[in-house]
Length: 98
Image (cartoon, rainbow, N blue to C red; front, side, top):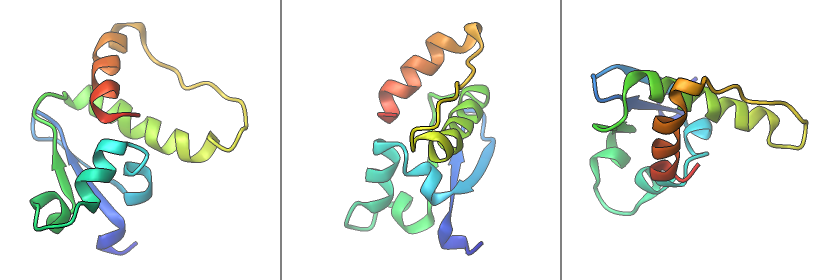
């Protein structure tokens, strides 16, 4: 894949997730950050830092993005969420508009 087809999402601990741009665009917030006119660093460099989202939660979010792309077309399947991650995931999902 080309570099411009990829996005780097960085957790609060500094862990970097490099994912397909199409997957990242599942999030309205990330979509807005990467497509805004102007010279924002997120748009120029294709990376977004989330100082409030832990590595564990951001990893689960990235998995959800890919799950959403694969199964949003109507095929019924479940996305498993561990109970201990529920609250943090809800807060992150609210921020990311996913």
